[in-house]
Image 1 (tube, rainbow, N blue to C red):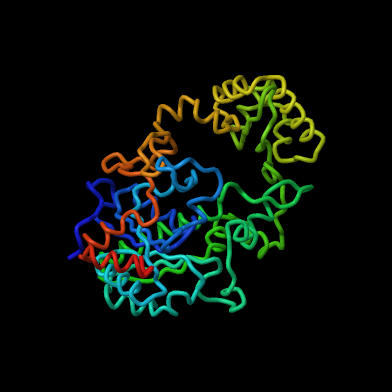
Image 2: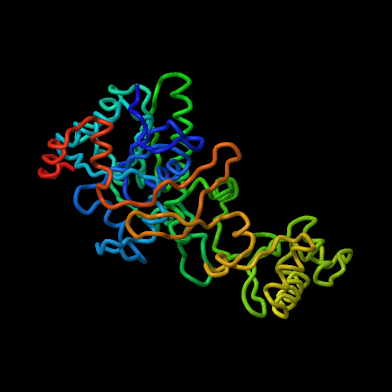
Length: 412
């Protein structure tokens, strides 16, 4: 029987699911944090000492209320509800503790170069002998198998975007390829990590058999490229950078207003509504032809008219007029715009919570919204090793003296 949950109350659709997460940064741990916000018990294992030093300190930081090291805003936002322990899995005593947790867990997620855990005696078959239903999700830059020269490579978000093909298409034709910000490739990988782990867990609970999942970061990103590769394999077409413009039709782009920027798109019958909204005759074949004949005289003229119409008006007026005409359009929002927007407020997208390290903070709330089993924030992020005593003591029954010895020896 699984150990009693260390989450203080049951909530969310994932209550009763226990996940061990041993990865760093975003691509794998963010998947665990999403599960934690939906009620899963997520135990994040970090290295003794500095922990996940990169993500705890990278970028803009907030002062720690105990006078300790500043804490990254990324960490504050993305490690809520997560139980943080330290453990050196490269040492035999560390591996023993890890293996004692396995029988009470449903999913083990990890991110590392292939071969790391087998070198420590933690290959999938050995680990799953202790829990045949265990789902093991491996996250790496290039996957667990393939060309040996690639398997040994390491990766970051920007590298994954480059190798996947998405970066080549992102940006403007006369500028260098651009990454999608902030860490879009890693977040995509985390989404694939989460849904695939839950899919395997569904199977394991139905059939009593766990399995391993191989997630390559570049493949997760590559999978979102739509018809890019069909176009190449069938027609030898290489998609090029086109900025924000759509390919083969208009309008789909960003446009400058009198005081800012908006984005809009108008396909099929929406295009006809746009023509009426900006004072052009929808029945005129000239403007209907302009929709797909971008380089024609009428296509160029339409683009100039639309940009001129938008440039003469404020962002608020353009957004109001076009949305009243049922043409999809929105201001290109800054953080300040978003914080003041009434729709974000009405949906309670930004909430406050208590962070153990920095105190009261406000940030992005729970996504998505469940009608019967909503997620919640029961605790903010915590310092390195904050939950060692609780997890190892309550879950595994390790005594206080043993914990002190493990800490002294650098195991935790």
